[in-house]
Amino acid sequence: MEDAAAPVSPQEQIASPRRAPSQQRSRERVERMLGAASALIAEQGSDAMRMGEVAERAGVSIGSLYQFFPDKRAIVWALAERYTAESQACISAALKDVSDAEGLGRAFSELVDIYYGLFLAEPVMRDIWSGTQADKALRQLELADSRANAEFLTAVLKRLRPGADPIALETTAFLVWQMGEAAVRLAISVDRQEGDRLVAAYKRMALRELLT
Amino acid sequence: MEDAAAPVSPQEQIASPRRAPSQQRSRERVERMLGAASALIAEQGSDAMRMGEVAERAGVSIGSLYQFFPDKRAIVWALAERYTAESQACISAALKDVSDAEGLGRAFSELVDIYYGLFLAEPVMRDIWSGTQADKALRQLELADSRANAEFLTAVLKRLRPGADPIALETTAFLVWQMGEAAVRLAISVDRQEGDRLVAAYKRMALRELLT
DNA sequence: TTGCAAATATGAGGATTACTCATGTTTTGG
DNA sequence: CCAAAACATGAGTAATCCTCATATTTGCAA
Image (cartoon, rainbow over all chains, first blue to last red):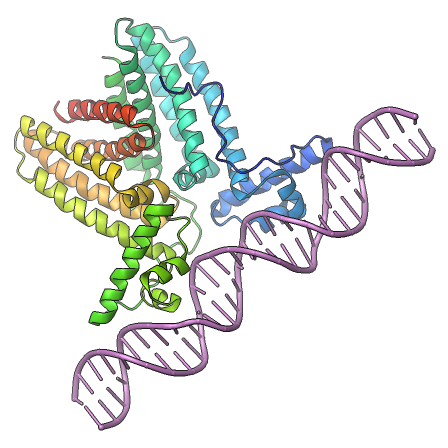
């Protein structure tokens, strides 16, 4: 058996921890830092984001930044973690009550649309997840997230096909999910029309796999 | 059809050209530089690769490195370009003479295996394609490469299904191809057993899509 | 209130590293 | 053989991440 990715995510790759804000004042300042980082990433991309600029825009000193974030990647990681937590809740809710093939088809199709829309609308998400692969820690986060999401799909599949081999179902769900993320990333890096076609094609392909 | 989808930084073009080696001596030195870079990437990853180290290991000065490569990314790009050219030739050869469904199934399955094996065996390829998506130029190279490869698939599909909508076939081929690259990248970042299962599942899924 | 430790804030400076450029050397073509 | 082009060099520049000694603020018990 593999590591069940749901309860604890292996975030040891990330740099050494820093003090977490315990006072009201510092919690607000950390929020401002993340907000500044988010804005800068949206404007220029996370690679071009400068720590000094983040500090300046947040109205804090460079030192304060490093009081709460061990390094630059940690800021991006913190933002990424928020997005994944948010979308995971959404996915769980959408798939929780699915119990028949038709329901799965509807829910899955809707999820893909939401995901696609999110990427189209959120420059930060786009930047983070298309620059993800460079950072090992982010790659791990993405994998863990994907595994967790795929588990919801796996649960549905097990309900729909009780007789099937569980490992095969897990593999299918994980693969289909990762393909979806890849498809969406691909779709947003070509022009809109082709992107729409690609997402639609992915949906057909995935549903055919899931509903058979 | 251009990349009109990203709020990238203003001057994110491929770096300005540098003098190409025209003498025998310098051609050999450039080879040594690429060799050194390749070795260092295999050992530590392209991110940790230091220009000074590349120069030292190649037995040249730092200035000579910059005589032929405008910047660090250009070295990685040059290596990536070699791999893509090589594999494209391989793909073209494998798909050129396919004319029936069974032939496509065999050729495609074999191609996926070769690709998977290549990634498993070549640390440099692994690093470049799973470690540097952050780089816009590399992302473009990958897309262009994928499109070119998908065209071979499209040609086969058009032969097998003359009546079908050409755009739909193109979309399918491009998507299936990109899914394959994503599947292989996924497979090499999990343990071998699960990776094998994922690649096998992808093959089934892709072939079902291609042969129907 | 007062005193004090822990938490927080600061920014000049250390350390690293991609990249430049003025200068010297080798090769090429006429 | 010579001038020009190509090539080689490496100390120096600039940019940037991050540290750390020091100063300030906050929580809280006496």
